Each structure stands twice: as C-alpha cells, then as structure tokens.
Length: 484
Image 1 (spheres, rainbow, N blue to C red):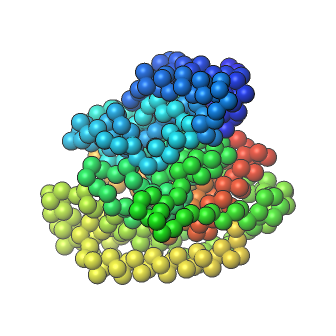
Image 2: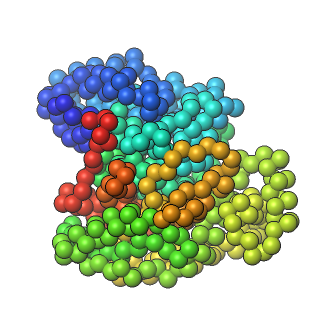
Image 3: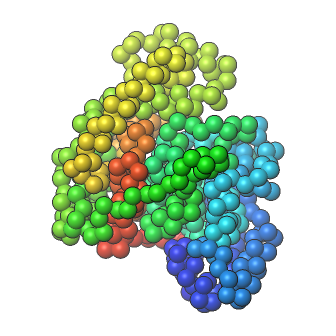
C-alpha cells in the first residue's frame, strides 16, 4: 500500500470499495504528499482541505452502509485551475481575474463529483492557457517532476506534474493546442483529447463567456489509459439544452486484440523535425506492435500536405483565440499584416493574419479544413490508428523570456522556434479527431516521451483500446525517481 499514490484511479476505487483503505485515509495520504513534494514542484496551487475531508468521511459512511457513490467513490483528485469549482478561484492565470469565484460548478466537475470523486485541489496553468509552459503572475512557475529545470508542458502542466509526482489520483484538462497531450508527453503520464464536442465546455471558459470555442475540447489526464476511458465516460454527453435533442453513443473500439489493429506510423513530417531518440522510442513501440501481429506501415499517411495543414491550423487556432486580443494587440497585428509579404508563413505573421481575418477569409480557411477532414476520413477506411509524436522532443528547459514564438528549442542539435512543434498539436486536432497519449519510453537523459494515437472521428474508444493494450503488454507509467 506504500505506493498507492501511483496506482491508477480505478485500482484505488477497487481498494476503497473493498475497505482495504478508507477514503479519508487515502485523502490524508495525498495531502501528506502534497505537503512533502509540492514546494519545488508548484503543481497544486489551491486546496480545500476541510471540504475534502468532509466528503471523504461521507464517502466512508456510504461504503459502510453498502452504498456506492459511483465509479470514483472516494478517489481524491485535482482539476485544472480553469475549471469552475464553487469556492475556488478560476483565474486562467490572469491577474485581472484573480477575484473570479464562480457561482456554480463546471458541468464536467459536477459529473465527476456525482461519480464519487473527491476534488481536493486545483493545479497550475499558464497565463490564459496559452503556452507549453505553466507559469503566471498569480501562482508562479510549475516544474517538471522528472527535472525541475524543465517545463511540465502546458496548458495542463500542473495537472500532468501532479499526476506524475503522485500528488493526485486523477486530473482533467483542456486542449486546443495539445494542452492535454503535450503535458502528458512531457511528464510521462496519459491524456485523452476527445472528439470535438463530446464533452460540453460548460464552466471551463473565461468569465462572461458561454459560447464554445472552435477546436477546443475538455478531457482527462491519468496514470492509466483505463482511467482515461472511465473519466471520458463520466464527462461526455450532451449538456443543456442540447440534451433535449441528442444523446451520445460512442462507437465501440474497432478491435480488442493487438493483432487485429492496422497502425500507420509517422515519426516526423517534412519541415517538422522530431528528436531522433524520441523517434527511436516510437519506432520501438511500432516494432512491438508488429511482433504482436498488428499490421504496421511506416509510409501510410493521410493525403495532407504538412505545410498547408500547419498554416491552416495556426490560422484557425489564432482566429479561435482572437476574442481575447486587446485593441493594442490588434493594432500591432494589423501593422504586421500590412508589412508582410504574402509568402511569409512564420508563426507571428500567421497569428497576426488570424487575429485580423475577415469573416469571408475565415470561411475559406474553414472550407480548406473540411477538405482536409475528408482526406483523414478516407485514410481511416484503410487504417485504424495513426501513431505519431505529441511534440518535437522531450520537455525543454524553462524559458520565460520574450514572446512564445521567439523562444527556441534544440531538436537534433538544431535550434528551431518552439512553436514549430505545434504541427503535432494541430495536424489531427483542427479536424476534430480524438487522440490518446501514453508513455512511449524514457530518453538517455532520463526524460519521458509519449506516443500519440489518433483515431477516426467519434472513435475515441479505438485509440483508447490500443493504448490500453500497449500499456498492458509493453509499457506503462513509470514514476519519476525523486518522487518514489
């Protein structure tokens, strides 16, 4: 029981259900670990100890009566700071919103509470959830438990760091630019980016915003792909008033045996290099899949031009986030666009164009997106999964200087803008596809890397099933050494 903090949530739930451990006892264990390890990590940035203890005692009494509160009965967990939770601040790391205390729970939060989860804290994010690092002027910087000098990723960086260090049983994040997938990859845990729209965004939005954003989704992070599926099933389904018109029914996984899967493997893309050692980890997983009888191709791809896909994604992404731009930022962007050559496709120029698009131009780009989606649909007639990177390499050293597009990272001894690796964020996400990230290995430098398994639209269960089999037969969560 000494390592129960690293057990998957579903196993913790089994131990709680059998009475081998009590909900209050497990909560106290996590609180002790937060007290011991969170100082240098700074992953958990808010807690409700009194409320969590009361819920834990209630869960223990319910179990003693023989009552079940749901599949997460008594499991302690934390949530990304941007989710609304009554009694807690939801600031998005923005000092202007430091006094924003929501009056009701986010729908996903309420569904998890109704399933028996004991939410005891919140985890850190970057300013406005807009970075692959997690730092802000309210809560400070979150570090990676594998190397405190490196980023845990973002924007769900606190979520992944807390899971990897054994400070929480389960987590939930959000993803528009790999904000679930990237931290999972950098911290050696698992994350699922669902099909767009299957989890309502109610209560995970900036103050005053109720409309859903293009591309953005909510989803779980965990130490097991089994936990990801459990949490997805709890969180997914129509909210109000949409539930008057439709109900969600996921397609079952296409296969249940590794030997039946057809997996295309893409470890890099033209113009978007990936760390050689990371590629070797992905190829090792592909080799194991082949040895297990799966059909594996190293050349099959959606018929999508990589450069065009990246440009389309960045334009759609930054158009989706342009509502937060100030007049000063808009004026700057208008100047950049006015002075830019039409052939310029760097990140800043694309971001400026996206922020100042006419609606007619957005409609043209959106139409391009739908053409790309049809090519993905055709690809998935022959293949079940595209296995690819989640980023260009393992976690990079913390770098908070300047603007995001000016920060460089080392990929195979070459410097490249950190924003180039967002190709792997948008390649499948801009066309609404689900993807699951699970551990794929550890580099010689002792840093974890993850594989990204992309499935067809609405077929979340297929990527989850493959990742569960990989976890079961090849590679599962490994705790960072300093937190064992």
